[in-house]
Length: 519
Image 1: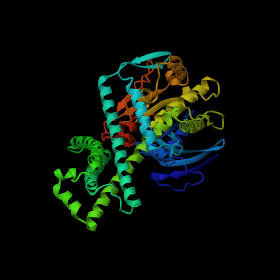
Image 2 (image 1 turned 135 degrees about the vertical axis):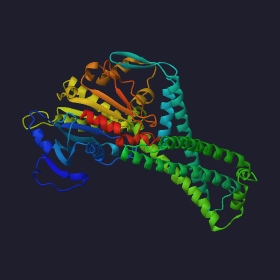
Image 3 (image 1 turned 90 degrees about the vertical axis):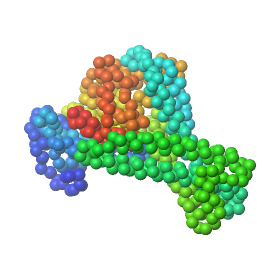
Image 4 (image 1 turned 45 degrees about the vertical axis):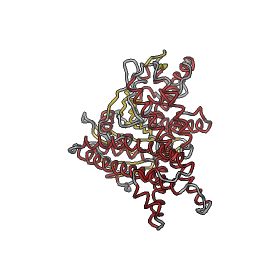
């Protein structure tokens, strides 16, 4: 059963009960044995809304020069589940018509509210120590029937170690600043201002610390806004503005300065607390800003009180935003890749896997009226943590076929796995701990992953990975290469804004070109 609607020019509109076939659809109808291609999308970490991934892929395909409007949406009943999809048409590079049906695995609500900032911090502590413990030795991984050695790169080790230490320093500093701000607010509120802590001098020092941090953070937000606008201009015209490269380097340098300033502020706050423990009769900031400190200490008007309140409120707002970003992104990673640490994470991981497997199985099980499979070709498209979920989903479906649980011909019908912004190498190296080289355990784990069990499972599968050095989550995929069928790694130079690069693949030319070639 299917319910259909048309979306001409990406605007929802009612369609007639029996819409007239488009030129592409008419051409397809005339080609014997032609079937639509299914694209199965696994979204990444962070906040998502239903059908957002389908819309993102539809936007990429609709930008193809040979795309044919309208876009149709439909809802199909599969067992007890309703399966939404978008239907599109375009002409391929060979001049032949193509039909594409887009599906998604939507799992975002399953991790909402499950992870705290403290759990993320301790997860990073454990996984970082576990991962870097292996960086000074050859990294070994059980693949294709035997242990395989991957020599450690000292340059990569130092780079990852520095990034890890900076991240932990920033998180610790944000925690210190938030704790102090809340403690001061509680002390003043509970005692109605009668508390002797913090002293006037300590409050002035902390206010100047927070003000300097706030100015730096707001300036970084402005830099990022301007960089994003410049990047959108590049995407719109595919022309590189003058001095664009210099501007991006300025953004990167200022980001490093901001991270250093954040760590410095956290350390400075702790030093201020230590110095003022014995009621220091002056302010440390008076050495650098004597007039400002004197005004703040001597003024009793509403303006001074308002400035102090605004500075402290700004710090809480900025830190709360940073905490939310960390939990939304790294929290999803924790919930999925570290299930052994907590039963609730194990249940969350299993729920995500069930949802993704059920969504993918529905695609493979769809049949025409004559009993043939609806899709002879299925493409997996996975962003960020979604690439880990897609990898597990594909392994599970292939394993079911191998064990005769199902006969969906997943191996023969899956043509591409396109991952972008993928942390798969990081999960293999850092997050998923390998204790004492338990090769029997590793062998059993590999048996659950046909994609690294036997090269035959990679014969028909073309694995494409898109990454950027400006994306701290992604990397080249080197730990999943099959004999004769390595992962094809593509560097997206357009994802050149630090951190924001993780979500810039969707608008990039590399992803668009690779998807067009795959279809």
